[in-house]
Length: 171
Image 1: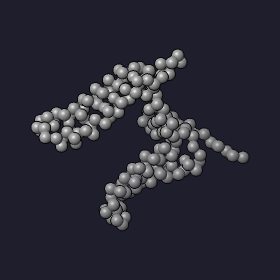
Image 2: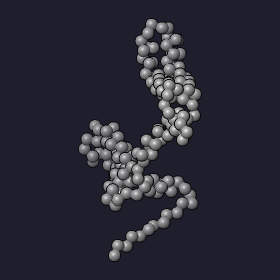
Image 3: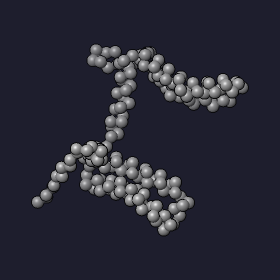
Image 4: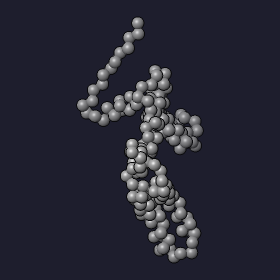
C-alpha cells in the first residue's frame, strides 16, 4: 500500500484476484464432475460444493489475502463501473418524450392486450418475443428518461411525497 491509501498491486493482490475468479468459475466445473466415473453420491456432493460452498470459501480467502485495501479497491472499481452507467439526472425534452413513449407503450399494450388479442395478427405465434420486447422496452425506458424520472417513480411509493411542478414560460 502507498502512503496516499491506494494499493500497489503485488502478489497478494493478484493471488486474491485469481481466487475470486476461480470462485466465480467453480460452478462451470460441474459438468466435468458429472462426466467422471465417480459414484452418484460423490458426484452430487461435489457438484453441490462447487455450486454452494467452494465459491464462498474462495471469496473469503481472496478477501483475506488481498486485505482490506485490496478488497476496497476492487469494490470501488466494481461500483464505479455501475456509477458511470447510471443515467444522467436531467435529460433533454426530446429524449424525455421518447422515453415516455418507450415507458407507456408496454404498459398500454399489457393493459389492452388481454381484451384485444384476437385482433392482433400473429400474436399467438410470437407471444414470448412480443412480451420480451415489451419488457426490454419498459426497462430501457428508465435509462432513457434519466435519474429525475427514477425519483418520480420512487415518489409513488412514499406516502408523504409531494410533487412540485416547475413551469417554464419562454418569452
